Length: 294
Image (cartoon, helix red, strand yellow):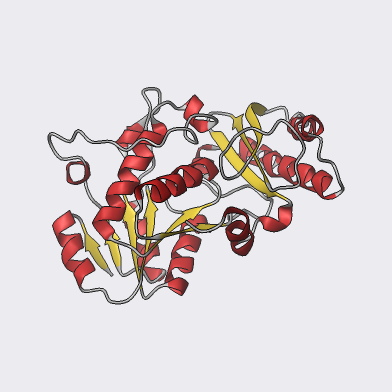
């Protein structure tokens, strides 16, 4: 595996790759969810580029960029085990050089949910992802379903700006008790970690109700609230039942797929999770069928 620290090094290494190239962008602090993205990229492509860059542009004024976990040595070892051909680990001046003035902003789909809670976040995401696409020149890029709004924003950007690549959405990887794997989980105390699976139980409960014929949106939101209420440490930030393509909040029953998502604070971390309804769509094939290709 080649480790490139500069764009010049990346371009030299990229020029030597032949065939299709898959890109896995990350901010490091890797877990099995990230390595699943690498595995899918490895299976689909002739070569894989994975990136580690803690992007300052997507951190808000009340979010501690310096506190974000950095585990570069372990992350690179994991990439190598996963068959990554090039690991790109640039420093901030390499991505945002002196005098940098250009940003990418995707309106509409970026404005609710996390976008409302974290103003400017998705502008930072879109800008860095657009730059990584231009730097790595992949044929496919891999993102996890867990950051559902991020996926919608990136898909919109790719379609609107005609990036010549496909976006692959990979299902959420979960712990045995259902908790979605996340770098934020490491901040949970043992007691909070024991409480956190209530989030998936809430999604599973609404999924079961939907499968049994419950399509009344108020009742579905009440099911999620009721399950979260069984855990005293859980504080709901938001619950959303939305169109998975536009993220428009639904106000009437529908037979089309629904993106059920929520943010719940347990201790310090805000934990995000989501599921497509019906639950059978939460596979790579199901996600592709429901969302289409970009």
